[in-house]
Figure 1: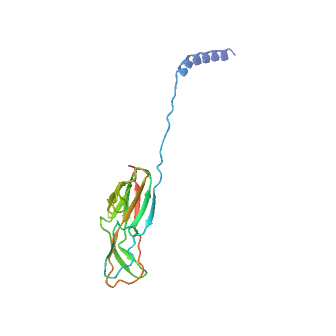
Figure 2: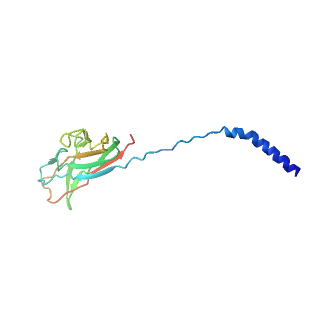
Figure 3: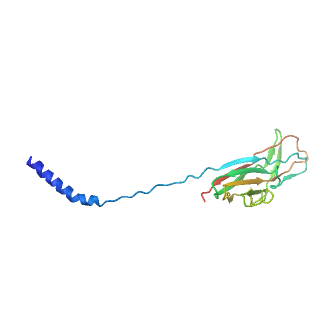
Length: 174
């Protein structure tokens, strides 16, 4: 019993001495934060349409040709930098034949709200290379156009020809 009293007294002394140190402690908290940017949306809105093509006569569609140039609509975070690349076919195909298609480095353009639309776009894109551009600072939108040229042979078989023209848009984080 005496031994328990001694232990109790010693414990009380230790706690009494340690307590003032505990009373001087303070703490603060910060938040861990992250902003997840909205995903990109890319939609094909108009096909690159060469219409009726005559054998032996190349047919060109300019990027400024409303209704026939290929067109995509892009939306994402306002003012975000995006990388734009294209996957381009080298020919259009029917069930039995192929017809060459070519693209030049000047066949692409974009509008981010700072230009004059398709006729006088904000900037040019080289569909043969990777392009870095910013989405609209106002609403995060952009429209992209592409033109090209088909080169049917003199003996080109009749029929409907098609191929995929793909745009790949990636947020860069800048």
